[in-house]
Length: 99
Image 1 (spheres, rainbow, N blue to C red):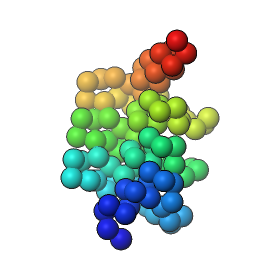
Image 2 (cartoon, rainbow, N blue to C red):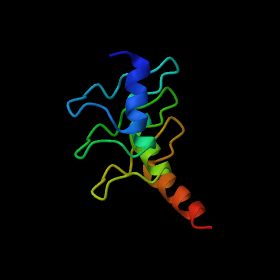
Image 3 (cartoon, helix red, strand yellow):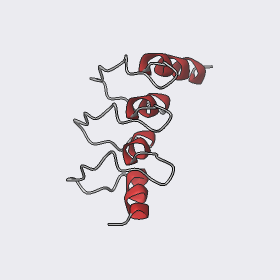
């Protein structure tokens, strides 16, 4: 499977059910898990929230920004390279989307 196809499938939510290479990155260092998280296509039971981009943004940060954290998410203290936690990112975007 080629990289372009994998990232396209992550955007569309059509990755194979047995896909497990979530830390695979594109030429900019963006993990495939970030793409799936941005579009709300992480599988149920996903547990690799700490996979980070070169800037330290984790899968959890991306999911929080886009409103795709699962109800049972509990890794609120993960932080990016600047020290911003998932909780802070979630609250900022939640509050600004309400306005």
